Length: 314
Image (cartoon, rainbow, N blue to C red; front, side):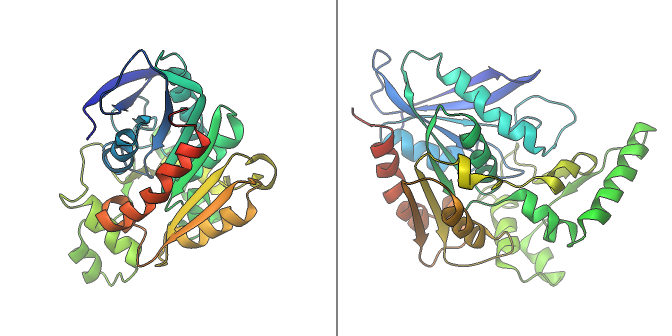
């Protein structure tokens, strides 16, 4: 098992990005290791799935892994809090890579990215922009911009933008921030409200119970700051610019957060010649966060995929 985790603060936009570095067993600082940047889901934090599940497993396999909190979230800086802005979230990846390339034990020619759920959409854009990324894996990847135009806005993005504008005006005049929790407080509360969607129910089971709850995982949006998502699309121009090797991992159980549909779309559209689609049978979106059998099946392909494209062990 991973023997050491180091917490670091990385210089970002005008604040620090908090990150945990996971080291391989018997780590030797005189050697060079391929590295993987691991990004958390929307409204999550580095302690949830990106770090404690995928970060740990990849480090155990021989990679240096860095799991980070997005700007405005978790232990990272940035005000106001709970902002989910695609420009900042995409840019965070390059700041994290800037830090990696200064570390003498990181092979800067072999850096990959793994990202989960909404983090995967930001990772797609970051991979297209930052050519230091040599391979990308998405786990139950989603496209938060698409979801904002769909269910997150009740299929009324223009109405949502009008409400955001009104809220920003109110806050500029002294009103309190509006922080909206994306999830019901419990599975039972969701069921009592008539929720039947598997993704919403399982999200509550993950984030609102000891199974996955973490202090930095707020599952919240700052409403007045979410307008940019309505115009953003994670898959914009992937047919041209997403050329690095790509592994898309999804479950075969569809849900409201659409990772199955969106993962298939990404796989079909990406320009990557070395692209793979792994469908984990019997797995839902949230099974791929932490359930041992589905994540084990994912890692059976994720680890050799990065091993091949990031030249693990030379």
